[in-house]
Length: 623
Ligand code: SPV
Ligand code: MN
Image (cartoon, rainbow, N blue to C red; front, side, top):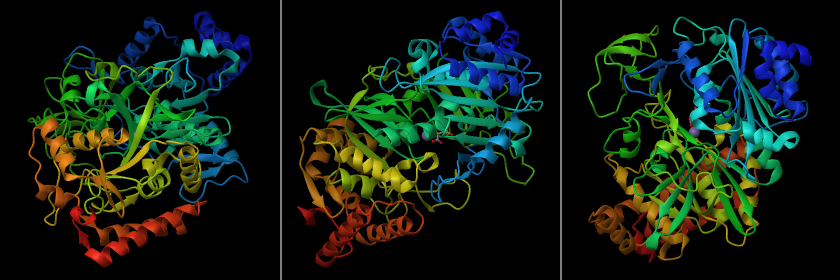
């Protein structure tokens, strides 16, 4: 499309906004997809409040969102079969000769590009295209990655507005030198509820060569919000080439003695308490989902890639999540997605700890209790993956360094999943290599009733990043190893387990105990408490935990509880090593050989301990 055509299509005002950014690659990209998708209208948004309001109002005007009883609240419904990330139809487009190994979903680049361009042709006819600019990471920072999003869904553009730092000015600042990510999305034809209709033509195709992601016929945020998990895949690939890290991690400021704040990152697979950990009252949150991590000298710094939250709402209740609860009850700008809307025009969700209406409107349309879907399955009032989208600014405990261009200095990293019987609640790795291999690369999580399929099945999820990797798993592990091993004092690495159960199947810890593990990690990063060396790493001493439980939670932590929780379970740990070893031997491409060595050493330590003390070893044996 030539410049004159683009000017006609955009109109003078929008055209001038686009030209305000001095980057011809950007102009060519916009021209190409305006021509291909052929919208009736185009709106280019700057960072002005006026433009942002236009998008917010468009989502109401288009019927993609509806206003709720409280000012600022809206609801959006995705299609009934569009409620989660579509893993099978999310693919990397790879040129001939490039291979990401058997665990990553990929197809031939030429074929994929041809297919998606065919789908996108004229897909926006009759619709308005929204063009938005954002920045991943703080602006004016080494971490910053400018992004442009083209979408015909005002809901998607509005969500990004709450979730990301505005980037029009950043694009202007970077001008010709901007190395930006690009996203083209169309929700496609919509049904009467304004949800994507042609699910069979749903695609999410990732082109690493051009740093572009294409999406069609879907609206669910995980498939469409380009800057979230789609950009994350592009960033992992870029980071691998440049020696930094893109991780599925929260960042929290843990408040230690004498007003000291120590920053830790935490990796958990979806639905394992990542968001709620990041928002523990009394600590401060930097991020709840995605972090970029870089080195500077001998120090490690992290930033929250985002500035908002797209959090799971199921189970959010006033007792366990007081901070989010408050946000969700104030007149803030919030998009509730796939919840139940009662006759009072307010949102309800399962696990909110309050009575839910018997009827209303939800992701299935008009809903009454007991309603079944086409397959005969009962439709829950809200979807298990229903979410809330809002700006982090709404939180009482937002960390003051969220937008610091230097990021926050990291003292430690922790890894955790749902694990009913193997890991103790908290362990510190012996060193970086031991931590990356036995905690991060060995991460597994048990399936819950909230995921499809059988409950309690362990799923391998290295560093909780499996779904988003864009380099072979083995290479990714190696990248992580190299990152810390080049440092004199890398961050400490911990394994946490909130989900340990006793023989009767009862959880051994309360949800609030997580705060104690955070405080202990904080003290360890400053070498202020000693620890007990076990075959799997260092664990806390009873006297330190007793003190922390009393000081922080005003709880009397008994020695019996300690012994039960911190008993090293040798058979379960050995079985885990066997499982992990087998996965890396048989299904992972490019596993670094050190991984097998470190796992074998851990196995030997466990076997020696078993020889001396038996299968289940209480912690006092190691003192
Ligand atoms: C997750 O599932 O890890 C999320 C939501 O954070 S999604 O955007 O779907 O990835
Ligand atoms: Mn996530």
